[in-house]
Image (cartoon, rainbow, N blue to C red; front, side, top):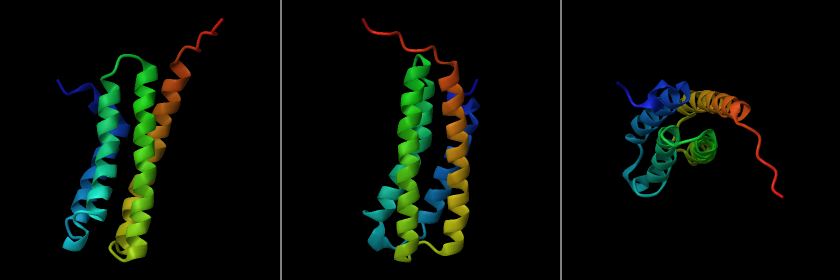
Length: 127
């Protein structure tokens, strides 16, 4: 039986995005290996990792917190890809393709987050 996180489309697309980022960065200059390449890979891998970790937590609130972290990593990746393109490390065509996948991942994650939020019971008033 597969782990619970694998049933989420958001994880599947984030996993695909991380794999593509790794393939793309394999071709980047060695001079960027310990700087830009490493940072881009960490941001990309953080997305499916946080979805997987959040799916294992008890309760919707915790899962949403991990989805928030994944969304932050997605935003970080967005900037790093743009920087890489502007720096000339990432060509425009590859940037467009990976950015399209990144955008799709964001929409699916937002959908999951929104659906979880709508099923979450309202917070209890304090006092």
